[in-house]
Image 1 (cartoon, rainbow, N blue to C red):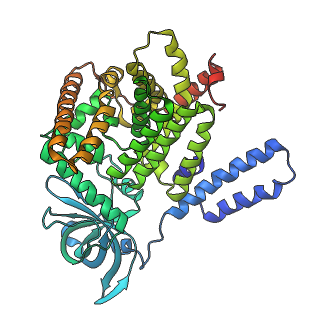
Image 2 (cartoon, helix red, strand yellow):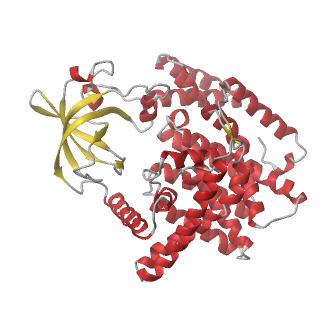
Image 3 (spheres, rainbow, N blue to C red):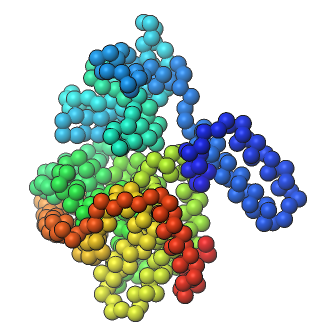
Length: 486
């Protein structure tokens, strides 16, 4: 991980990195254990640097990005290209346009079709509609992504391996159902569920439920999204390791509070986690988050928090080997990793601290889980967003108990709707009622001027010092026996 981050800051010839790998290897076999360990760490760092370098594609005639217009050109001066590709992701439908991610196959150069590779993000009109698996022929102006004000849009897209944007497209449908069969059917099922929500639940509750269960935020107003952020409960509508870990743990612990035995409660929580991943369409980000959530659940079940961090490191390393850009450009991945790591290390600490105060059943479990997740995520959130939600602990205690209920009742409603629709409408009414109350509470909390402290500016060095302080305090604390060795 350190190597990947360093690799993003350094720009040296790859030969230098190869030498850094092989020179320590020469000494690896006859030095002391401490020296061997240090050399292995250095090798791992260099390997991370090299892996990041190889994650950047070589832009040549075989890559669609080779045919990009320069981002500095005026739009009228840009030339058009004609190319073909297949829609490989669920279309991103906005209020006034749609975004399609296409895997390219051919490009027309001098009236000859040439094979190409690479992804293009196409911004098109809402109609005609296009779906996952459609093969399209597109004529448009290809543009290299660039920064938008202070937002590094080019870096944001590079984590998805997208290096070309397409504007003002003329699109012709060539064929349908050219995508992965399993992915296509999952997305069709997701569309059916989304339609069920629209038919049975009024807005804005319907869009909120789609955001929670289907990862579709497009129906939510900017005002409501901002209110979620001010109240410190944005994780409720985010598909991340943080969100899934907290929800999975809460479902398991709340089921335990209802006197279900552990052997029943935790398998139910894992099953609901699997159903949830399928409902959101099983994208790579959700699968990663699901694995992180499962690690926390299994660790809590066996009481082995002191060993589960190794599994987390393994999962993180594996995902970064596949896509090293995640740790640099994907804020969701960063917060997921920090939240799960924080839950692993500090859940036992919160359990010990909360033994000294009166227990309030599920509410105590929510507060413990929320505070444990905040230890390592809060410094990074403040650095990235410049905001601290003072209302977050209170908001989480008030609102999080409703989330497992919403998820469980919604899944029951979906299943029953395919068996006996009139009965399902009763479950959907209950979900609508809870969601409406949830929105009312969020709007009330976020309306207070004391809900947040914003416009905070801190440097990366201050954040590093904060994490070092947390590490030192953790090592020196009297409860260190409860923590895994770090």
